[in-house]
Image 1 (cartoon, rainbow, N blue to C red):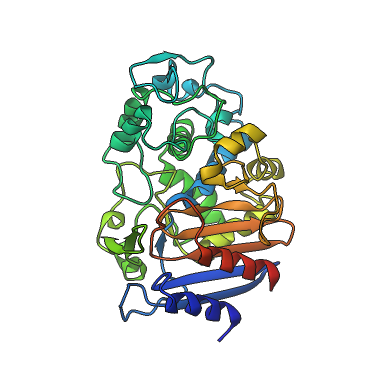
Image 2: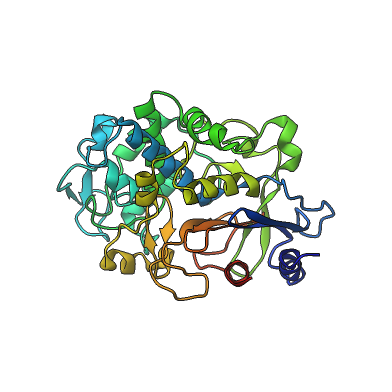
Amino acid sequence: MNDLTALLEKHVAEGAFPGAVALVDRSGEVEIAAAGTTEPDGTTPMQADALFRLSSVTKPVTAAAVLALIDDGVLTPDAPIARWLPELASPKVVRTPASGPDDVVPADRPITVEDVLSSRSGWGFGADFTAPAVQPLFADVAVYNGGPRSPLDPDEWVAALADVPLLRQPGEAFLYNASSDLQGVLVARAAGRGLPEFLAERIFEPLGMKDTAFAVPAARRHRLTPYYLTAPDGTRTFADGADGAWSTPPAFASGAGGLVSTAADWRAFGRMLLAGGGTVLSPESVRLMTTDHLTADQRAEADLFLQGQGWGYGGSVDVTSVEPWNTPGRYGWVGGTGTAAYVDPTTDTVTVLFTPCGLSGPAFPGWLGDFWTYAATV
């Protein structure tokens, strides 16, 4: 038994999760471990090639797709998104964050591609999930936290979003989630083909990410782990199985949280970032993707999500060394379905930890910190 397996088995025994797959790649030297079972009180052993619903670990992949189109000259960061999404040409903004959805003023300026990339489009979730202007996102537009996928197709989704007021002015504040879904629709409109097809052609195939997609074909479905919601008291509830929501292609391919993948596949994506983009992205796009774009005030306001760190494009960027793993420049993100994937250019390391159990809130659980500490110190 290697040390990584022992770490996972310790947390399985303590009930943190029934099983997990973890991977640490230090300069190409890969340590991978699978421990426990795929279901609570189950007998199916967790396998290293298990498929997991990525939830928000999808976000860096979608941001990379936008940057690929910028590299192509199809998109430009300062261009208004209305050039490709005319439905969003005249957004309204709630007068205050506490205002109702009918108490609105015009946006100060158009929403740009860069606003969407940096999650400062004005749509999304802030610290107050009960804000009146946020509720339409939950009702019709958001595909959030690995839950049921939107029945809307991309055009219907954009039309629905156009009726939702911005919570903040464009560029003013980091707001979570909605901008990543907007990135996915922007990619499809600008590229002239669906997000799944674009990702397959420009990212998955070049990187050999053969198991990453928005749905799982029948021949691989036995490798898809069940998914469980986790309540604050630790109670787990079955949410989705192998023949559930991810067994068929979705009407709306969520750039915020729709992908299924393996630890090995995400490692290939992370290694591409550490290599400066390879054949997928330019070095400048990788630099922009993994650089904090928020002001100090914007980081402070987003502390519920970022916990003192910054935000690049599609993922967080460490700017302070609060814990042993917080190396400035470390980039990645955590998914509500119990997934986490990061790259650290300082140590040339990729870390991936996937579990089948959703998180009970935005705070990082202790077992995740233990894994990151292991990766940073071994």
